[in-house]
Image (cartoon, rainbow, N blue to C red; front, side, top):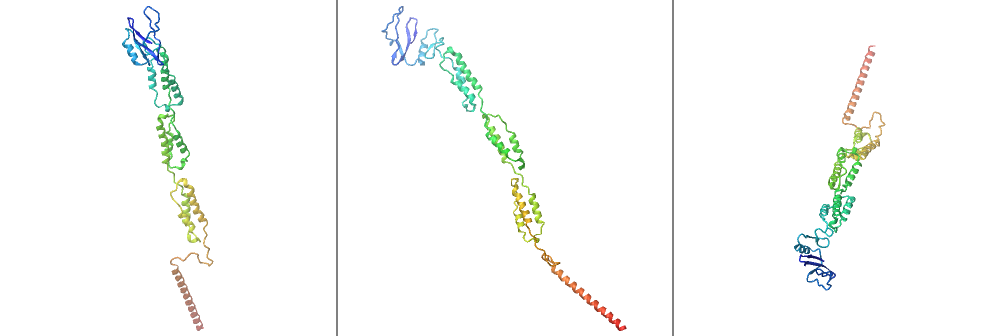
Length: 333
């Protein structure tokens, strides 16, 4: 029962706790007597209260308090300001610390979050003002746990994958590999999860540099040499030159260094076709040639015939002159 005694003395604001639909026994003590009036009915001077923490009770007590008496909220019921045992401790510092707890603790390491949760779970909100130091220690524990929270490391999975892809490349196959090397060298380790976008940007820079690579051109030196060799041949000297011509026409330009084997096959195809050539058989008649007559050969034949006739006529003339001389000599004798 809580009651306020006035100076007369009379009882004012007398409250008693109601429990299980019953009343606590309230006794009447007459002034100057220790005799208990067991038949005393408290109903006229007292009011049953279900919840002693109801603020209306505290207000009523404060409004009727004697001079110098200050009613305050207690742990289970209103009490005097000097009653530290029944007064609730001040949890302001605890509440301030709790307000500082980050909304998203998933970005912090499991170890440091575990320490923070333990500090929060250790808070006992039922301590009295006499135990204020314990409450202050709870607040400090939360503050300390917040201070040592550590961010999780950023995820470098994409960066590592991009670097592995770059390392798997043969830089000698490309015209300029410096862009990839620069992107890889620009990677900065040790970023935390709040800097994940920066880490992802590093990975993208490497991927973009790889995508921009250009292969060196394939080496067509052997192909060009084989074609030059084919062009130096007189196809009329061979039974069938079509194999060489087909191999030359099959050459595809614009291949890159990764297709070098294909280019080398083109060169080999030409060389093989040249090696497989068979020359036409030589003519058995002396002075004849396997070559087809060229333009102007008919005029040469006519010239030879004319020369033969001319030489024949000269021979006949010589014989006639000779016989005349012989005849003349004979007649003189």
